[in-house]
Length: 342
Image (tube, rainbow, N blue to C red; front, side, top):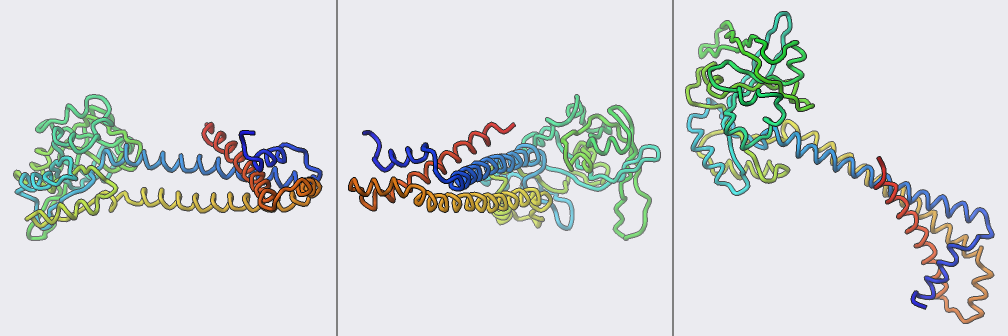
């Protein structure tokens, strides 16, 4: 006999017809409970892993992992700051940006937006946002053409499409803190950004040179955006980068604005772990109670084994194998059902 005696007899007990119908019912219900618990764990964790993958591959691929933003004034020595930041082994690349708030106007439609001035050639090193710009909008984002790329939500709110013109109202800075009329700038929609998220409803992109001209910043920028090797550890990495800088800047990372997505995913995953452990725990207690009833149901068989010289350890091992086979069978069914779930 190639298998242990206890396993052989326990497997025969699992296949044999039970005399007590209640024992059969409890055994089947515990097996179903384990199957359902394992299936829900696989489906639930797969969904959470999918959300986390989408967070990393979609959201974190288009927003800066970290930002070094000037505090009191625009950063003039941004090239040196970018070079210093890129010297960190955890920083992949950096790109300058200018950011400000504007009010877009098209007829009677108004839409407040965050306008981000970028250098397309450098922005491609830190972001994949160009992959989500429809048509040739990214290539047409050239300085001096008054071009703008609008998020799809903004374009729908203003009822505009590629080739239309919109008016941007930009606050005029006044060192004397007096009220001044905002600048009115005509911009041509050169592309539509369609990411399928919150970014589509609040972001507009223009060339970096145009943004510097509108705000009269010269060659200075608002800050430098960074792409990191480990975006989930962005807080510690950006602090490490900040210690190497001589400029007085804000140290920002993506968790300050979009961290709630990652925290929600982790919280739901923890709750699902807890719920599924409780479900499987109840099913395991059912198996234990089934074994206790199975001992009484198989009292005659146990008596025969004892007459043949079976020790207490062998009898105990038989029923342990009997319970393990039931749990294993339920786990296999749940794993197959979870993996085959559409």
